[in-house]
Structures are given as structure tokens and as C-alpha cells.
Image 1 (tube, rainbow, N blue to C red):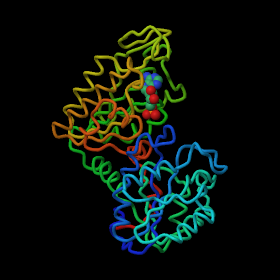
Image 2: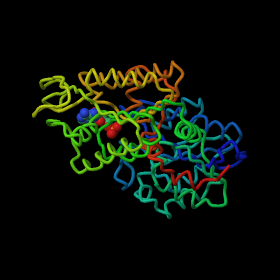
Image 3: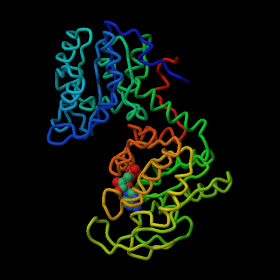
Length: 401
Ligand code: AMP
């Protein structure tokens, strides 16, 4: 169901509470990567350029929930946002719901921007606490969810705050609108061939997506550590590779499902392996099919790389979530680089290509293809939940268009 957006609301003179995703990496007290802040600018500008007052709230990292921690302050994000907007951003207090914060919100003028301190300094945020949410909601006239990276979470600011604001406008921001539109359109009516590439560390994280995508996609390609649970289920020896033994039966179910729906589930058939989980040491070898004792698979091998790249290049829709190997380390980054380039080539040949957040977005940057794909999502977990075919409670409860 399409949702109302911030553009549908008359914000003039209104206090607009916007949940953004400013969960950005920090280095030496400054924002190391401001992509998430940049992605929120269209919504923030839409509020302030029409005379609204933008009260922004976000989480950052994983503080303990027992009050202010300097390592997790959002102040650097406020500073960076001020630079990007070219105007001051108020950052009134070390506590998002104390009197100083409330006073600063009360003193805002039309067109002002204010950022509240890290929501997770209160344990109530992760618990979805209604009392905490009520305090955040009490001064606001409009609620906006523009935090795509947190849409799969039922935290207080995502669900209990809009619940507490029933009767007032509750809408999605322009980033959330764009993210959901991209993925849902690609999944609902994909141009074919439709290829889904799934990698990463844990098969347990991706089983839901594999199960949901197998009947929809023409081909599903798996790589990364999660592939070894599949290799093992297929009876191959995988040496010391990472296998989730309690998921072998699930992997077998996926192999059976692929046969039933007659869509291809590709598993790597050669592997770049090492005797140590390390960037610089260990004996590095390439093995086909079976991996001997003492070796662990850390990247897809050259033949798998070319096969995957060929399949991706001829696709008309590609969705990619999760690296093919330990791409942070040069000896095991080749497979992920090859996929990244394949996705860029597919885009240049007219395909719609979507990279699902987190590590794959970092990989796209690393291999220089970030501006050669159709869309890079700002949310890894949230885009994965869409691949699982599950909706977001945080979005479902907002006003329908
Ligand atoms: P995820 O967070 O599930 O997307 O997983 C990403 C992480 O998986 C990255 O940090 C990779 O280094 C790691 N990874 C990918 N392939 C392997 C592998 N074969 N063995 C161990 N770790 C891997």
C-alpha cells in the first residue's frame, strides 16, 4: 500500500519530528562517511524550505542504554549536517528527552533544524517503550520516518512514537519512499532474466531471502561464508570453512525448493582457500569442488567468478546483498570485485541493478562501481527484509496515500 509522504503534508509553522538514520561511522570525533546524512537532505529541505521546524532524531552505534556516552554522541553528525545545509543545526543537550531539549524545541523558529542526542542513550528506545516514546512525541505536530536503515526495527522511535501520535499526520520521508519503491518494483515486476546474488557471513541471516527469492528470481547465486553450508549439504568436503551445522537441513530444503520451482540455485564450485583466517599469513591455494582438511574457503574461485559474472552481465534485473568472500583482505577480495564489476556491466547494458546496503555497498565503493549501478540501498538489514517478502511495521502504521 502506497504511503503518504512529507510532500503531502502542509508543514508551515509545524514541528516536524523526523526519524533519520544518522548511524554513521565516526573517526577522531568527526563523521568518516556522510552518505546517510546526505540521503536525508531532501526530506529535511522539504520541511524547512516550506517553513516547517525539523526536529531530527536518530540512533548511533550500540551504547549501553544507561545515559550519555561520549563515544556515541551525535554531535559530529549535527556539525556535518550544518555544513551540508549551510546553516546552523541546534544540538541542545546530552539527553534527547530532558528539559533542555524540550526548551530548545520550544524556542525553534520556522525553518530551524535541531538534532536530538542519540536515542539509544535511553534503554527505552530498543525496548520500544511507550513512556519514552510519549516524551519524544509530545511536542510534535507531524511524524516522518526517513530512516530506511532502521525500518526493519520495532524500536520506540520507529513504532511507539508514531503510535503515540495517532490523529496527527504520520508519513514517510523521501528516502524511505525511494528505497521501498526501488526494491518493491524490482521484486513485483522484474525484467527478466532476474538474478539475485546473496553472500556474506551467515547462512542463517540469508535463508529467508533465499527461500522467498528462489520462486521469483530466474537464478540465485550464493557466495561468501554462507555458501559452505550449501557445499556441505551437497556432500562436498569443505575443510575448515565456516559451516552452520544446525542449518544443513535448511540448506537442503533450499536445494530441493530450487529443483521444485525449476529455478537455478548456483553454489561456488571452486574456492580460494587459506590455512589461516588472516590477511597476511597462511598457505593460499585454489581448490575445485572439495576443500582439504586444514583449509578454509575465503573467496569464490576464478571459474565461479567468471560463471557468476557471465550470468549477471546478461541479466535485466540484479539484486545483490552480501560479499562473495572476505573482501576486506586483498587476497580474498577478487570474487566480490568481479561481482561488483559484473553488476556495473549489467547496468550499462540496460539492467536495473540494486545493491542492498551494508558490506555490499562498501564493496561497491571499494571497487569503484558505486555510481555505475541503478541503486545502492542505505539499509542492509532493511533491504534484506524486503527480499524475505516481509513488510515493515514501522511503515505499515503510517498514513496511506
Ligand atoms: P554479512 O554481514 O553477513 O553481509 O557478512 C559480511 C562479512 O562476511 C564480511 O565481513 C566478510 O569478510 C565475511 N565473509 C565473507 N565470506 C567469508 C568467508 N568465506 N569466510 C569468512 N567470512 C566471510
